[in-house]
Image 1 (tube, rainbow, N blue to C red):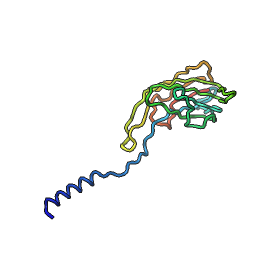
Image 2 (cartoon, helix red, strand yellow):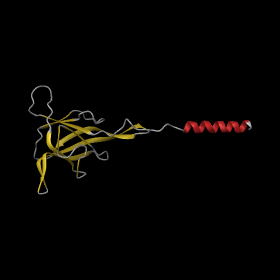
Image 3 (tube, rainbow, N blue to C red):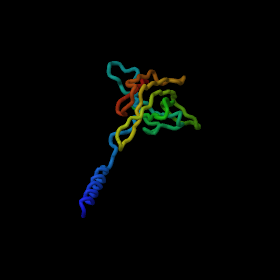
Length: 169
């Protein structure tokens, strides 16, 4: 074999070997969910007292669908709500003591408008981009209120473990 062919094979081999990469697996990235915790409005002391909401149902008005990140009409002291990264606000209905009678929703109904600024954050080649949100705001838009007050703990949503919003009832 001539030295020229050997050199060409060596260059070709080096080129092929440097193009190979290990399999990419995404383990560190997921779009963050809005984490809401419910607390007792009448608790005294400095410690917040969790207070579950009985038969809670959360409906996305924009999607006209029940949120599926927890069991519908279950008793919850905290929930995770997915936000739409294509929009900058979402309307939600939170229903305490939810039930259906004659095809009508009963229970205590609260309407919330959640505003935010969506951001696409690059994680890695395997994970690509994940959604995070900034400038979180919440407004009670309904007339009926089982919610006494709402406190935003963090206006930035970049992980689902942290409680972003405290609702007192």
